[in-house]
Amino acid sequence: MRWKKGRTKDSRAGQQWTGFLDGAVRLEGTLEVSGTFRLDAQFKGTILSADTLVIGENGQAEGGIQGNRVIIFGRFEGMIVAKEYVGIQSSGVVTGEIHTPCLVIEPGGIFDGRCHMIAEGESKEALTIPIRGAD
Image (cartoon, rainbow, N blue to C red; front, side):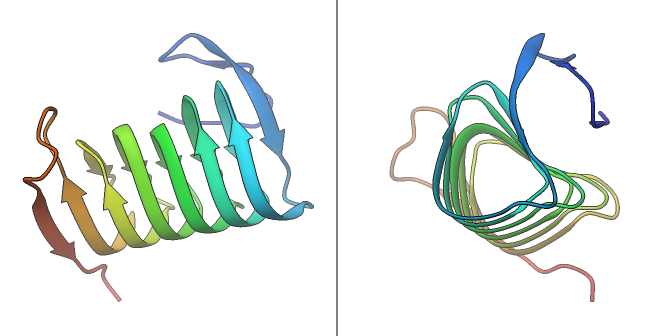
């Protein structure tokens, strides 16, 4: 799946883009978004996403993400909690901790941290997989 600037719909979900932060933006704090949102900016803080969050190739984020689907093309450092899945694309770099039932890392994508994969209905039992990226 490729995401491009100017694309108006998420072809997989059929949803409209609800927002976009360009690379010229620097933001710190808490960002609450709904629908499909793309971040190509520099962000530090917490992102609360009701649907799909895309960190673009130029995006750099640090802090925490809570959402349903998180797709990383750029760089992220911190903790991701995703109800549905996390996808690290070939250009993506994630350092930190991921909590999700499904983690997909494309060839070339880098993940350095811990992944907690909890099956639906399991609140206390978790499988922890320490993963190191290639240096």
